[in-house]
Amino acid sequence: MVQESLTQELIRRGFVNQTTFKSMKDLDSTKRTFYLGVDPSAASMTIGNLASIMMVRAFIRHGHKAILLIGGATGMIGDPDGKNEEREIKPLEEIEQNKKNIVEQYKTILDGLDFEVVDNYSWFKDMNYLYFLRDIGKKVPMRQMLGRDFVNKRLSADGMGISYAEFSYVLVQAYDFLHLHKEKDATLQICGSDQWGNAIAGVDLIRRVTGNETHVWSTPLVVNKSTGVKFGKSEAGAVWLNPDMTTPYQFYQFWLNLDDAGVDDYLRIYTEISEEDINATMSDFEKNKSQRAAQKKLAYEATKFIHGLDTANSVRKISEALFGNTSFNSLAPQDFVQLSKELGSTKVSKDDSLIDILVASHLASSKGDARRFIEAKAVYINGTQIGPENATLDPGTFIEGYMLLRRGKNNQTVICLQ
Image (tube, rainbow, N blue to C red; front, side):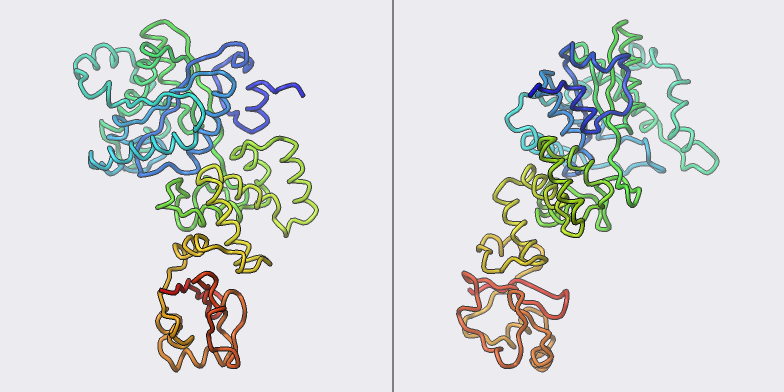
């Protein structure tokens, strides 16, 4: 089979939005040094960021040299584009920790690939302000900066206004491209479509300062086709790559519950499985959409990519036990530990009665309540309904020292023997 070119892969996987290239095939004929920037505005990147980094993987695999920029300097200001009011200034200590977290996530997502990480704070921290105004500010027309949509919105009668710092953000980011062009021979910036204006400002600055031609390649923002909401947002907030902020189980469930309309696109963006595999998965999906074969494939592959094979296997087993036809006996201790992060856990003694356990786990407010729940057959152990006749626990009730106790439809917790 003939290997597809970079542009063919980018088109097939939906990574094409706007570009300055007259011909996209320039990417196939010329190997370039490119960069992608992320500001450390949070302790983790989201799956919105992940889409761009999956595109970075494609560029690297096709022979282009990657620079991953951590915006230690720009993160001190905050990108105002798309914001209706001033961002809250983050403490320097928080920014520093966020940078470290993002670097570790880069290492995970780009494991086995060659890339370089830079921090724009390293070239801004000692920069002379007058130099910046004279040698950089003089090259940037005010008309260009005032023409930005977000600036006009913020300065309108109904707007919240804009500080000099946030107004200047685009100039600082543009200088990043100039610096990397001069020092690292970067000739391409890749970004999400929301960064197009900032990236073009860098191209224009490089042309005015050096006379050289550089380029931008942007990818569309991923949007949930059913809701129109920017991808990675849920009722609970953003979907983070950090397992302490979005647990692997929550991460898996996010993908599993995605809309049917967009799942084909999501498989192409967020996995690197072959076109043949995607087509086979979608064929199974179309035969019986209620089985959610495409979402299950996507959830497993995305979770494995970010959290590793063992964790992906664990959360898949947990999900199948909770919502499918898989027996709880298939779960190992580490699976129950993973599940306890979602549902909480209660330690009990082997001599405790089911009534005692219901009260200790706060599934019943009193022993009388516990008895009534059991008599009403509203109690389940490892998915099996419990009645008054089998309410006495025996050692076989526990699976290697764990069990899932549920009262009613949604009140459940992990019970572990101490």
